[in-house]
Image (tube, rainbow, N blue to C red; front, side, top):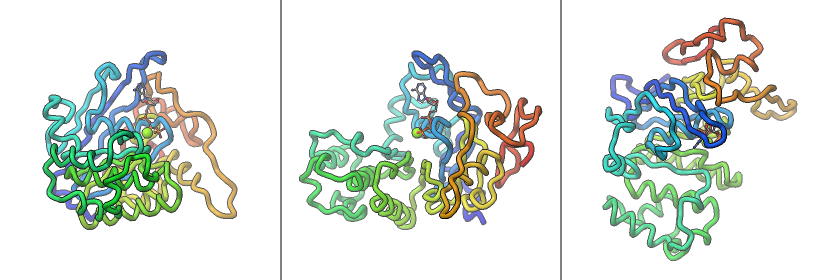
Length: 314
Ligand SMILES: Nc1ncnc2c1ncn2[C@@H]1O[C@H](COP(=O)(O)OP(=O)(O)OP(=O)(O)O)[C@@H](O)[C@H]1O
Ligand SMILES: [Mg+2]
């Protein structure tokens, strides 16, 4: 059952977003093709898909985190509370980045300047964002002791730094958090702690989150809805439980089969990822798909409303 009231407007809407990078050596890279999805307040949305499928690109597009020269072409819309982020001026973007929508990254050490004390980082945020909470309150929320304020980033473990990234995001007051593989550089225990912290924050602070991960089990544990990318296309979207239990797209079926299970041999998907330097026509998975037919060479629309799939045979 979907717990979200569909009469309410989505907090973020991505509409027919296509994006082509300009790469110095590769030339054009068709990273996103006609991607549409929405997120409602308080929802946790999972994004899965193989490496290079466009997950980080869509996250960056939501905050317009590109350099102009990187992009050869971008079309479609990204609406935050009804306003198109892609059309915003630098000044308007500064109002949104960090303050409304914030991103946490896979390598937390890259988010902090190694020669700046944590207390100075917090002082800067307090100056810029006039937060509702004190640094101490936020540190307590993310399970860090006050003493970290006297330390430098390199004094903290990966798990602590990831908590610190969250503290910074919460202090700035962001209502949407985009977490791009936030736990993949952590050991199993730190990963578990951060995931549970995110779950608590969702419950207590009413956050909205986009959670990108290669770990389908984490997506299942944390999110209510999920989308799956393949070769820059959104190939399936639905309630997380349903996508996991009853995947519809042949790629997603194969992806779910790849989940390791005790006493079963490893399954891996044969073939190669699609070449994104060629504009895709038809289903991007058809070369690797066991049930593809000639019709899959033509345009394949997304079918259904509640549990969407981009496949004629699903
Ligand atoms: N700045 C860039 N210039 C050119 N091509 C890029 C750029 N950034 C990403 N790409 C390409 O765009 C495609 C999508 O990349 P993206 O980083 O969104 O994938 P991803 O799904 O996040 O992968 P991963 O799971 O490895 O993080 C890839 O083919 C990638 O090589
Ligand atoms: Mg990525």
